[in-house]
Image 1 (cartoon, rainbow, N blue to C red):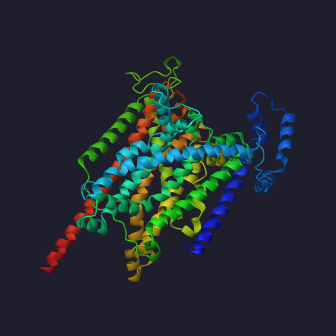
Image 2 (tube, one colour):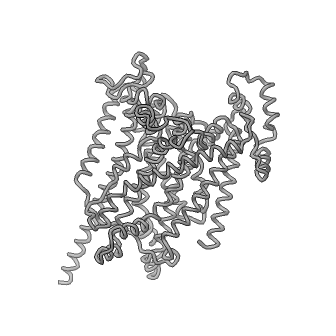
Length: 596
């Protein structure tokens, strides 16, 4: 990276970080709730909020000086190692945040190991067949999509029940010994690894289809040697997706940390945001920004190292996925998922989703209630059916908006340089609180909050793929032949970006549903008793061990939706490839007839 781009990226990170910290400093005032009242309730819920008590808190904390003065005092103490004292506990902030960061980094190590192992398992079949030139059929990645769609809190509850309570292999909670990190690492790493592995698995066939791979196989190179270089060739396009994954494993692991009672950084930041404990919140946000920036720089350097001098010299061969046939079982899988979802929705629409029957609380599945009932006695099938359209529509709109914003910003690296790294560190819950403070809690506000942070994976992917595509030989040849920017964008760049971007969006669709639900669960989005799949998972999370059917139904619907999305995309890709092949055959016939 040259001096100019590096300078712009550094300035972008600095400005974005300063803007984020300033916005966080305004949170107590944006929420339109007296910060003194929030702090008083966080300290003691039983104390009466008398005017004298609130005035004493304002004077002690200096709230009357305004948010900018408080931010200035906090920034002034950082060079001295003083991040202030907690407004709630009165304890120094830095030791608390440092201890939580140590716990989160330790958990991150275990979760990252599980992520990489899961990604390797997802790609193992493609690597084995591709390195031996035996790849005949394309893979849709339905299994990876199924695992990636698993809610982490539900997976954590299952692991606690099975591995911690029934089998007693590992501790079911706490953070006192190395064995305590096994179950939470699995809960965090399995879905993340399935997502990363699914993206890499779709990129590998193009690497194995390159001329060097065919030549090496004919010459007699060992399959392991071919596999290592193919993974190295495909990995740079996937590496940027590790940034939101890494930050999410630290700052977005709140539900898992609560289930396992882990005092991690994500839990500390969320509790501080809810209590409006500004010094703790600002310090935790600063740590997340620094962590995201460091991870972004490290991953960027690793990606450029893997690509080598070809990236700088514009001699990078373009990766083109070979036309692989699709197995008939893929059509059966897509049809099964579609029919199952339609039957669930149709059966649920025939029932009342708001009918409360306290005498039928937490009933198991039966003929009357095929999916059981929730804690208020409401039929889960009815709520699942009535929430289908709202769930898929909002999640689809948010996903499309995130993809569009990511595509636009990713194609303007001078504008988004550094911004992506910082924005990826902002937890969606915190973004929801900021948006709710400005516009009030609503579905639109929750969707906007997810869009504020949801574009970053797509922007990172577009930026990386675009840099590689621009450095390819065919782009240089097109420019030499006089191709303009619009022609390059329409004929070369967008077609190269589209498939990978679509795959990423489909894999992240269930995650979008869950993030929207978490905002609604905190009172920042969809409000009860509206039936929505993510909300069904969130409001029944506490009963996952006692009545597992309360979360299995919505989780199964999300999994079916994810598998249907990726299998449908694979079938669509096969249809497009078939049309292209038929068009090529027709062109050859016309050419032969003309020559004759």
